[in-house]
Length: 192
Image (tube, rainbow, N blue to C red; front, side, top):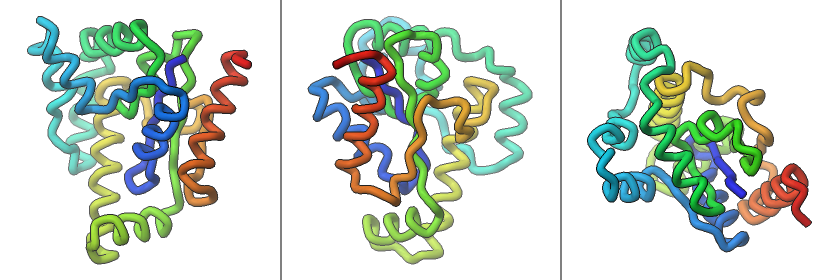
């Protein structure tokens, strides 16, 4: 079972992914874990930009990189993530996992989102910053995620048809969201 989780900044998607992995007793791979795994290989130089990308802070950058890339720069990073997923059941946070593993029959892709106000309130509470700064941080982080996804996949990041299951995390607890993801994954994969 491989569950990939895309998420909006402030939706608590990472925490929900951690709970899913914990409840299933499987490994969680996020940017940092995957980078550590990549460093153990002789392909790290080719994988480096996939893990050390700079935040995408402008629409102009997204347009420029999308035009340049055409979705073709992902061969080595994609194969690396496929190898990680082939080794063991796991939860993969971000890294265009929904796209990379879409043809894997043991894969379930999830996108976690929330209304703007919910995300703002969460960021204000978690980081003790002003509402204005929280809104700005959400905008920057989501642009970076969208830019990264578009650069490597030539597809839009937060469009429902790119995922098997989408959750609004503002209407339930993290625990309930994790349980729903697990239930959905078991049904999709015919696991009792």
